[in-house]
Amino acid sequence: VIAVLSGGVGAARFLTGVIEVVDPATVTAIVNVGDDLELHGLSISPDLDTITYTLSGEHDDERGWGLAGETWRAIDSLEQFGAEVWFRLGDRDLGTHLYRTGRLSAGATLSQVSAEIATRFGLGIGLLPVTDDPLRTFLALEDGREVPFQEYFVKLGHSVKVTGVRFAGADVALPAPGVLDLLESATRIVIAPSNPVVSIGPILAVRGVSEVLERRRDSVVAISPIVGGRAIKGPADRLLVELGSEASAVGVAALLSRYVGTFVIDEIDAIAARAVEATGVRCVVTNTVMSGHGVAASLARVALVESAA
Ligand code: FO1
Image (cartoon, rainbow, N blue to C red):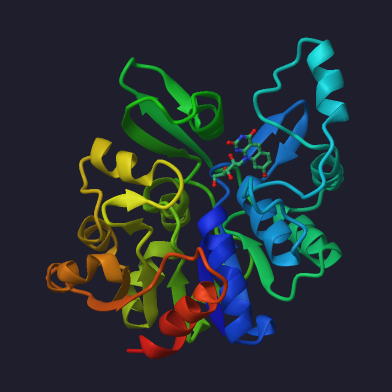
């Protein structure tokens, strides 16, 4: 059994490789919910949906989020009312949010609804939010404001400097049913190449999760989301620097080394392998840039098989 701690786009791409290498029925993604938001009265879970849409092949590959063949009629109507439309919601995507919101208001948990949505999209893997309780990422900006994640990431285009990050609700949020059992029993726990601060951070902040990883670190492997000092996508490199770490494979290894026994870095960073190992992890070097076809599968093979402790 394999558990993959997952954020959004990078994790989704990695998971498409994982299911080429092992039986999807043995894989469960434990997904960040700190990016979730309520908008127009709808409950929206971007990381859960990005993984669902990508693994089903119905995603819009060039955007990286949302569904292919989208139309935008509903949000255009919303705009006529003067509603906030900076967070783009396509007509097909709205169906998912309408379904999720209806089920949650009928008393279902996010875990239950996520499983129903995964089934509708024919997902072979398990899909678990890290918690069914409220957990929301906020970023403190240097102008003193504190904004919810999507306001930072989309509305502000993450073009502002961050002075702090907070996971509201982490102090009381309980792991979703099955999360801790899965982490205890998994033969491998993989930390996907997601933003270590705002995608993996909220997952580790849920009570009991980081303790299991620390105890089982020899079975935990992480893939660096930073290649050659840059994030492949998104603000991970800037966030690391703004929050006092280093935008490098070594910087991420230092952040994760207490939870991780093996750290996979890109060939571009091969010269840093010894510095990575100096943080206390085993370092494995391979191609981690999932641009071409087949790279996600070869990366998954390295993470799941070759780097077995
Ligand atoms: N990202 C954007 O940059 N602009 C958007 O308008 C946007 C809308 C959106 C709607 C649904 C969804 O599931 C994701 C969406 N994203 C959008 C991506 C999202 O902000 C990020 O994928 C994650 O929150 C970070 O991993």
